[in-house]
Image 1 (tube, rainbow, N blue to C red):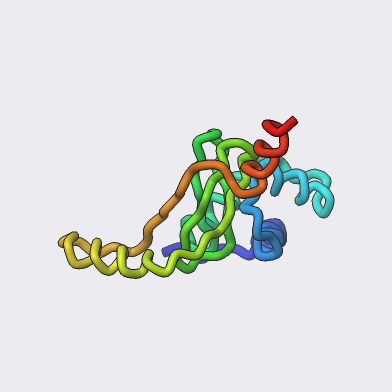
Image 2: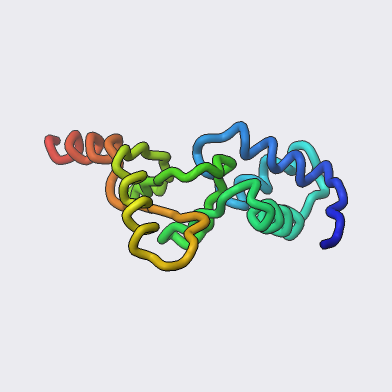
Length: 135
C-alpha cells in the first residue's frame, strides 16, 4: 500500500467538515475552502472528499436532489432528508441497533457499514406550510 502524502488542503477540508452538522455539499466545501486557499479548484475538493471517504474519515450521503452530502461523523447513525428545504439532518433512532442486529443475523455476509436515509418534510417546513394554509 502506498504512503499517503500529507496535504494541508485535505486536512482543512476534514477540519471544516468536523465543525459542521449540516452535511454540506462539495460546492459548499469548495466555497469555504476558497476563503483559506483562494486558488483551490473544485476538482481538488472533489478528489479530497473522495479520498477522505475511501479512507473512512468521512461519510458520503447521496440525496434525491443529486448532490452528495458529506458528514464527518463516521459512527453508524441515521439521517432525514427534507424534500422541501433539502436539509439533511441526523436523527437518533433507538431501534436502529436492533434492526442492524436483525439484518446481521439474517445476512450471511459481513456488514461493515450501512446508510439509512428517511425522506419527507421536516418539522420546520411543516409548520411553515400550516401557517401558509391558514392565510
